[in-house]
Image (cartoon, rainbow, N blue to C red; front, side, top):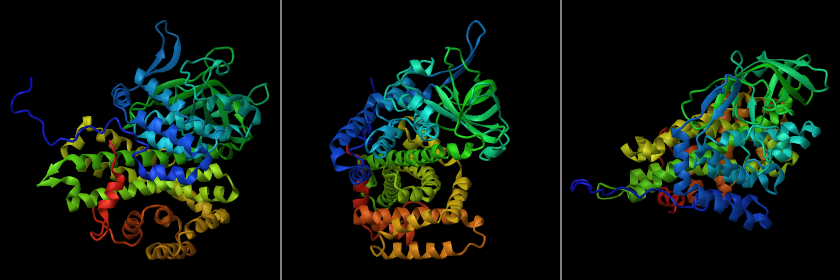
Length: 544
C-alpha cells in the first residue's frame, strides 16, 4: 500500500494505445498526396492497423525487452562444433516477424510499394529501431540482385516475402529470407576500394572462394549477404549464403558482436571468410556499380529512420507538455515552451515530408525522378540524419528529469539518434557524393532545380534562398571545402519548397522564416514570437 505522502499528481498518462499513423498528420497527408487514389483505401487500412499495433502497450513492452536483452554470440555448440549463431530474446523475433508481415521488405513487388513501405518504416521505427536493420538490408538487396536475372529470379521472391522464417537452413526450403551486408574493412572504412578480402574463382562459372574479413557486417544472423571482395578483375560484388544447398554451414566466422552506443537490440558483427563459398553478382571489377543502388536504398532508409525517431521524440514532448502543469498552467500553453515545441515540430514535419517525397520518386522511376534522387538522397541523408540528435535531446529536455530516466523511452531515442548519420556513409561521404552528382550529372541538378522551382513565387524567403543557392553553385572555387555548407542548403531549400507547396501556411511560414530567412537562432525555441506557433504545436500533437 502506498504511503499517505506518495499520492501521484501532475504526471502525464502514458502515451500508449493510440494509432501512430493516424495521429501523424504530416505523414497521413503525404501518403494521400503521393499514392494512386485507387490504392488509398487499402493502404490507409493497412497503415492504420500497423499504427494501432505500434502504439499498443504490448509492442512497447516487446521493444523494452528486446533492448534490455541484447543479442549474444554463440560461436560453438556444446560438443565443440563451430556454429557462429546469434541468440536473440523472443521479443526480437516477434518484432521482426511483424515488420516482415507489414511489408517492410516487399516494396519492389507491390503497387505504390515505396510510399506505403516508407510510411510503414517511419511508423515502425518509433516502436523499436534495431529490427529495421535487417529489414532495410533485405529490402535494399533487391536492386543489386537484379543485375543478375538468374539470381534475382531465385532470391527475390524470398526477400520480398511477407513471411518471417528464422530457421537457418537452405534458402530453397524457406518461406522467406533476410539479407545482410558486408562492405567495410578495418583498413579502409568507407573507402571500400581499399578492401583486401580476396575472391578466387572456382571451377563452376560465377562461383568463388573468399578469404578475408569484414570489420562491420550488418545483421550477421541473416540468410545471405552482399559483400565486396577483390577478384582478378578488381573489386566485385558477391552473394554469400549462410547455409549451402546441401544443408552444411558456409564458412562465416563471427568473431565478435559490436558493443554499440544504441541500436542495442540488433546484432552487428565482425566476420572472417576463410574459404567461404560465394556467387558473383554482376560483372567482375564492377562491384561498386553493382551495389550502388543498394546503398541508395539504405540511405533513404536512414532518412526515414531519423524522421521516425524525430516524430516519436516530438510526440512524447508534446504529449508530456499537454498534460503537465507548471507555473500556474499547462506547459504547452507557456509561450516559451510552445516556441520550443513548435520548433521541434517543424524539424519533424520537414523530415517526414522530404522522406515521403523521395519514396514517391522511387515509385515513379522516370529518368527525371531518378536524376532528382541522385542529389536529393545524399543531401537528405546528410541533413535529416544530422538533425535527429539535437531534436531528440531537446525533446528529452522538455520532459525535464523524467526525460533522463530510462522508463520514459527518451534515452533510447537519444542513443539511437546518431546512428543513421554514421551508417551508410557519414556526413563527408554524403557531401562528396552530392558534389560528384553536381559535377558529373547535369541532369541531376536540372531535376533538383525544377523540383524546387515549382514553389517559386510562393514565399519571398524561399525565392531568396534559391537565388543564393544558384550563386553558390556558380562558384566552384574551393568547392570541396564548402561541400557540407552546400549540401545543407540544398536540403533546406528542398524542404522549404515542399512545405510551401504542401504544408499548412503556419508551418511553411515558420520554416521559411527560421530555416531560410535567418529569423531563428542556433538552439530550438528561437522562432519569431509573431508566428502562429500554437497551430504548429497542435498539428504535431498525438491523439491518444
